[in-house]
Image 1 (cartoon, rainbow, N blue to C red):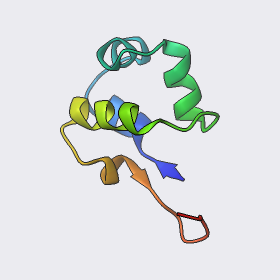
Image 2 (image 1 turned 60 degrees about the vertical axis):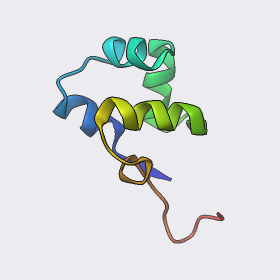
Image 3 (image 1 turned 30 degrees about the vertical axis):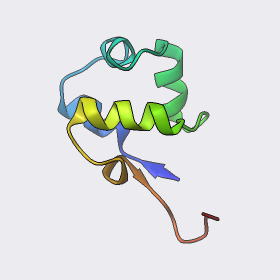
Length: 68
């Protein structure tokens, strides 16, 4: 699954630390999420969408070859 979390974070002028504090996770979780080593839970995806004032679907993009 592709995502645009890093792009949204930078557009909102947030550090990884600031974003982690806003959504209640560790900075390491944000690092892992941005690098693709971790997939966000639905709760975390919702919190990220709230921070960026967008829909979850705008943050996480399913690719054609993925099983839904």
